[in-house]
Length: 248
Image (cartoon, rainbow, N blue to C red; front, side):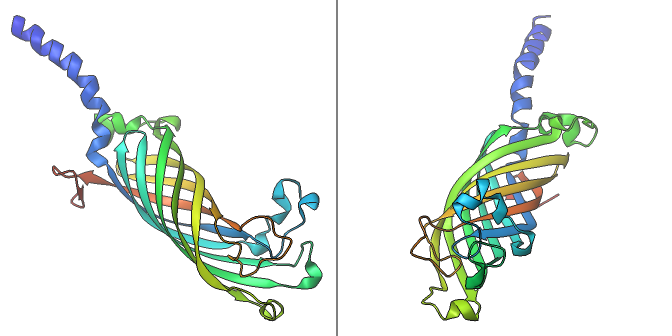
């Protein structure tokens, strides 16, 4: 009888601990995505007094695309480290701005290797369920499968701007490397034990005023750009040595 009580006690004590550690079985994630990109520089846009909250600078005509690939390591249940490889194609023009008569225009290609730290303010409950991991249980609640996180990081922004004829006549700096600091928000939905679909929005503050290839005497701040990306994530099993495993 004492043995039964002892086993029961151990089960009651150990079960919550074991259940809380299930996320460690899949600590690594690989992901890829595609979305939109836009730059806010010294070409195009409206003057501050004419542009409440900067919303008039968000033009579909100036929006281009970005692509993303990366890997994530979950150091803690609500804290992760990630490495991104991002490519963005961006465009900026004086058309429909405060300097329309100037007629400057620039196309920018940008490559960004980025190290990020992520904090999860919302973590799904499904990955803590043995039955869900085995595919035996479904969660109908969206919140039970939803992750929400914020992030920041650091990385070089390697850019090259292609000016139009009007801009090419000016003394421009059409390529270089700047430091990019992202401030972002992400949401992921766990639709099966190994896969997530999500959305990532990241604003990049830079140390350069030449991302679009041009700066003026009236410029008071460095260029900013954003990536808004739809992301697919695949979870990898953690091996006995704590490394990612690609085996099924």
